[in-house]
Image (cartoon, rainbow, N blue to C red; front, side, top):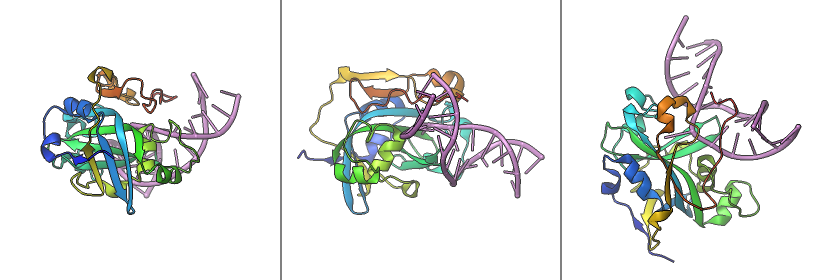
Length: 209
DNA sequence: CTGACGATTCACT
DNA sequence: GTGAATCGTCAGC
């Protein structure tokens, strides 16, 4: 098995949130939750660029009990509940009081697949296990309970291994499910590994509210 | 306190 | 492609 090396705070503590989102592709997300080790390679991310981004929870400096984690120091986990049933996992970047975050939307499972299947109540491994932010959080055991955790902790972290992602496979596209954000919805803040079967494609909404 | 709504997913037509 | 599920959060009264 490849040697894993935890990303240091300096990786997250940078102003270029889209650059960090791009660099997260190919890295390994690890959780040790309930004493069970699970991991997966990140194949899809979305950047949320703080107070000027209408799609961000922190748009115009909004700060509430839910999103205050976004204002914390770089390298924190921001996890919140969406649609009353999905826990979405984000990485907080940039300095304290600058609410940048990156949503991790899809993984390619590496370790603990048995556990992931159990958590998601699935019987066989397919491309849907960790495809989409809600699915991957369920498979990895991520819960709003862990929002605010440091990614330097042993429960949740992101690491590098020997894997080298072909930079030509990285594609930049518009974000998903943020149609309400006006012109910011069209900004190319989503990064995917082209051709990877775990990348979520459609996830569109009916009403488009 | 109340109402409206989502950084989604899945079953069904 | 369409619509329901489902509940914490937040703006507004």
